[in-house]
Image (tube, rainbow, N blue to C red; front, top):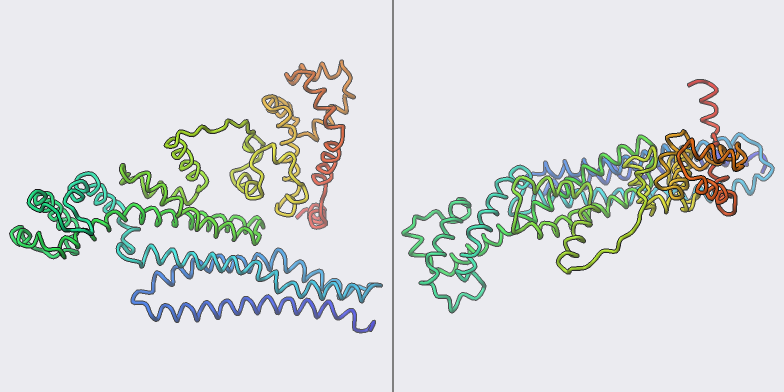
Length: 470
């Protein structure tokens, strides 16, 4: 048994690598077969190849990120264990075997959400590029379609409705509405020259009472009223696609990718188009020909802001009051970028108050830099206690609660020293004394101690890099 035990971890590392590459090979084969089978049934498969290619970026980055940041370190540990003598060989090998079996589920945990993202990309491309009636023109000619809708909505819609273009045609006074019907028919003939039969005015007069002809007008009217929603869907999807591609590449370079990242993309791909179509309803009477595509593209980038807009409009119509809340935004913390704010909100941290008292261990599991996280939390603690005076301390070089603790402790916080310090930073002495007492009682004292440990911690790779100077 002693002769075989050192080989088991090494065999496990090979098995782990084999499992991963088997999944990767299966994806490539399935991707190729699916693309061939579906495209062979299409007249113009270019858009499908493009959509599949874009979607495969998410899956391949998921594979590579999982392998590089999670699986490769684990394989390295297995290889180290293969050459090390361990007194508890049986227990160690059992743990390794259990972890090796979990590789199946680890890989699927990453790949399945990424595959769903790829599927949504293909579906939305199909809805906006291939589905009738607008097809790819909705990407290249939104201005033209916007003009058609504006003319229809502003000049023709009342007359068409008055003309009785509804499912029930009986009982309509055609003589009274003849002029309106004629005007509508001429407009539609001019705007959709290829969709209606080309007839001169005399022929139109002869067929104006024809039920099929009026039905064709009704269909064209219904098509025109779809324009705002198609534009909203198309450009919200495009905005979401651009956002997610930019975000996944950035996260890849800073090693901040997790399976839940792909789940958030799935939610965004479903959420942003839905919200944009609701907003399109608010704009239907005052359609913005030039601005609509840009607005809905930005909805794909910032769906939460769009949801706030819908909430405000709904409150205005229902005459509901919004409760006033005193929130301390995360943006007041030094070094807090828009990306950091977005990441914290993903983790359920919406403001500085939540950050100051959030579970540190939970945040560390989902954050890519412990010392940066520790600095943010310690700044948040100082911010929520000093509020408007927070910037005064930072301007004096005291960036967070840990620095404040050491500065005040160094002065032993006697009245004379605190008075001088209070005058130097421009903050009331009582406020500084109260804060000093707060950070020296439990549980705040333990929390600050834990933050100090996190911020002063160097892992072995960082230490080796600093020593070598590389």
